[in-house]
Length: 259
Ligand code: ADP
Image (cartoon, rainbow, N blue to C red; front, side):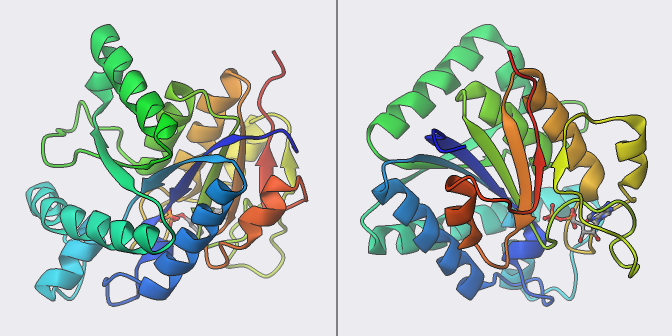
């Protein structure tokens, strides 16, 4: 895995927010420091970040994330600008600029728009800027939305032709059963996403998260088809990204098809 140069890192709401729903600044700052350091090492980084609704919840002092789509869309708008402002502040401290990219699935389904998005990413990366990507929740309706940022991160990894997709979650990796139960074991390498593997993914994720492991398996399948490896690892310790880059065993590796 030593030759990986361009990585897409996706970080989930459960990693980025406290139980209160407000943003976890310590975690976010630690992540930014590591990503900036990877850039210093000559890597190219694209960040797909959830957390906008969570930041909105924190800003308005709501007791929990609402289930209603309209409220969620409003909260995403309220939180998104603040989320990116926080990233911008931390990345600036380490000498890097960021660019915000809000995508919807129909952008990537349309050839000209796909090319525009691709060119914008390439140009930003060329400038040494870190693109920070999220779904454009405000204009996304049910049909056109990615549904979750795991799937979005897979589309982005394909779009930028990444060498690796890393999904940071609140858990060490993919387990062979419900991780809340003691006997569930971490699977280190998944060669192929079989029915047996799918059966290991429980239902919804955490209260603040979204898709759980099912959407992460879909993401692995999407990137795997074009030969991109994917790793699920624990975002509580973003320093483990150094080991990922060194090719050490971290979390769960989903092997992309060898072309
Ligand atoms: P994120 O916000 O990082 O996307 P989610 O809450 O959506 O996080 O998904 C992570 C959660 O998925 C874990 O905390 C765990 O409760 C749940 N989960 C369900 N099945 C599995 C499994 N087989 N292995 C690991 N985690 C699982």
